[in-house]
Image 1 (cartoon, rainbow, N blue to C red):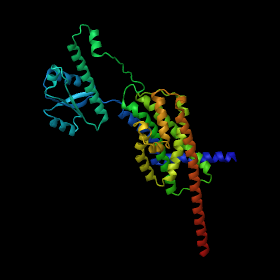
Image 2: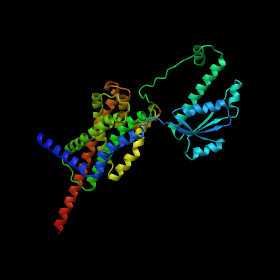
Image 3: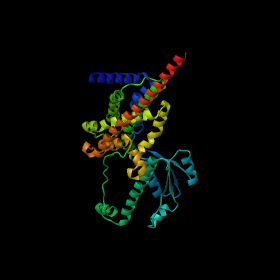
Image 4: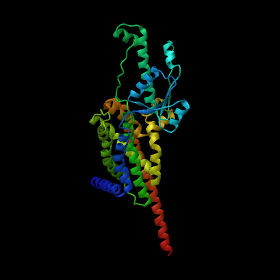
Length: 398
């Protein structure tokens, strides 16, 4: 009996594996997508931070101090003075045409105010549609302003030694030490979450596509639902275990992103995540009847799922209702745990809440998939019996 069950599971696994490699759509989502998307995203974000953001300068001061400010801005690695304009209105045209992303405006009394021991002002206008360019322009303006302000303080303080000048300009010193995301880059910030989410969405697409094809072509139903569940699950488990290792362990190292994860901790943590994703995909494939609908669902939900994980928007700022929706997704807890493990060097004991949640979701979605598959089997069996009775009546009538 046990041998028959094992043989049946192996047969289903083999049939499901062959179906994946025979279906070009399933191959695209199960093999090509997990292989290509991580490389594409990593290559796009590999620069980490933006450099030489073009800006426009409107200098109504025409003074040595304004020229010094402009030179220091242009010498910074993040901003490049690309254009000069005679007015704010003219400078805005460069922003509107996408040729620059910010404006530095120096009023006519800029140097005069400093000479009178008054506070001078530099107006900085930023294109807020690009947060990375806004950050580069704003931080550069702030750093240059502080540097020139320090020079002015020292020049007017009447100090005699460098130490006196240092204390005068900065009585309270501080040291900026970045931790975890040491580069301050966007890639190290968002990529770990994207890589984990790719696996869940690829599974949803692959499983849904195959299930939709089998229903549309009226493939015969497997008599034992438990065997079907394990056969299908093992087929996707073996393929996506390789894809998950490739996405989360190989790709970050290929592009030099921060990766402090320990392999055994990764293995323990990701096992329930992969099982939960397979169960989630099986449930989704049974609830979404058509293969085209599966693709639309995956495309429309990818960005919301990333937001609900709390990686791109603080978890505390997400409304309670949406946090509840997010807690039903395997990717939410996997992203939170994997980010801590890869970027912060957390061990499995440090991510136990996420690990427990993933284990619960793995059990819940597996049972839900079994229940839905069994319900569909009963419905299909009922329809087949009705069709058989009608066929017998027609034959008797003839």
